[in-house]
Length: 436
Ligand code: ADP
Ligand code: ASP
Ligand code: MG
Image 1 (cartoon, rainbow, N blue to C red):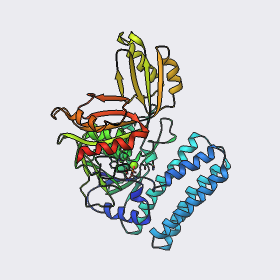
Image 2: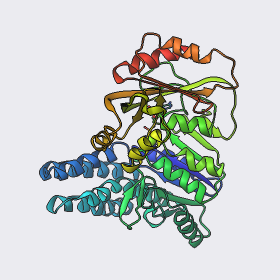
Image 3: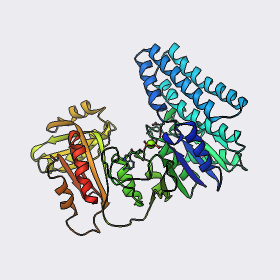
Image 4: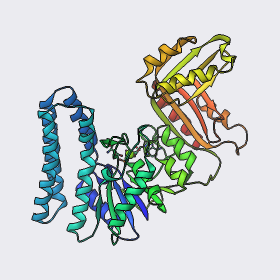
């Protein structure tokens, strides 16, 4: 079994869906995980926002715009009139469902159902397109096997049991298609794995089915050594270890959902990143092996807040850090970076939703300062094996950038810097000189 995930751009038009069909319609048994067509989830988020704000007229207009767009896709994708008719009926059921919310009350539960429509439609489009082409496939409803628990973590046991049962029920089938991103929560309600979550679905499916490989097909030829949205001359990396890839994904390389490497690493399933736009290019292979030394890649994560607790000599007292961490635990807020000195400790968080309460509690222990609009720049590579001087080389490139925090030595493959977001572009461009 292999698992192939196609992202929004890879299914972003009728032509792209046809291309996906050619990539999946032969060879070994596979599960294909699809995202919504590009732009759809953003539109659904906007529709939900309008509904929350009670701007139902604007929501209705956006829904109709999207409906027209999908009618265009159906016209282009399908050749036969009866398939077009069937698909328009199916599209109608989804958009009538969305329009229903403009006549009714709207809560967070309905929001999740709204966001789920993109993946439900894209998978149906591919399945029926394959059918029209005479290619057999089986649509596996993600809402029947993908589940998160009370802590919003994947329920591995449930996923494995139910996914394998559904696959077994369709014994002769070689090609399974399912929705990325969407799931049910511990209460059986529709939920999702957060934005970009289809990658996460793919690796969870890979683990549940004991796949030989998980392939993430996207609009770029693999993990690049710097952020291609910010820096011009970046290039794809042939191989990364699970830990290196996980660090890059967590610290802002948008090509992978931050959590998507963890399950693959635990089950030791190789992850291959490939481009649907240039399917012949090698892409990136992520395995347990660590190959090559030195700096391999740079990523950046925005929207970070830094919190400094200045507590005089209290820091030296044992138990102090535990008390600080307990406050973050209480408010379910993960810490990304941490640095300590004798008189102060600084930590960073990317979820600022509980920051006011956290700050209030921390003030019991000393003066608290919060800086918003910070960016973590993460330099990933194999540093311990490498000769001395690597940190100095990296710091030299950041000579002109004010650095708020530095984290080094936490793992063998990461040096992180906290800088102001306004300096990010300059920092990434300057660090790119490490590759020339
Ligand atoms: P998909 O819709 O297929 O999931 P995404 O937009 O989520 O695609 O991810 C692919 C995008 O990630 C690329 O187009 C690129 O702009 C961005 N990206 C950010 N950092 C990196 C990186 N280090 N390497 C490759 N792509 C990156
Ligand atoms: N469609 C979802 C999103 O746009 C999930 C994904 O594309 O991975 O976030
Ligand atoms: Mg993505």
